[in-house]
Length: 85
View: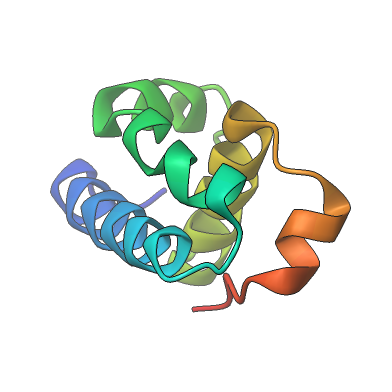
């Protein structure tokens, strides 16, 4: 399990990257979702339910999946934006 302080830093970094990526989208419906990205606390509460997340890459992947699910982005939306880190 990663140090909690490191989890916070990674989560904030991923959230900001996702926010910027969504803001650059050509689709208005996707751009409008930038204000609905879950908070760091909300995401880290979800992370705490999965103790098997041991690496930074696993954490980044989990955070992105969590954000995509919470924003209810479709597969088509996700394909049109690049959320790789």
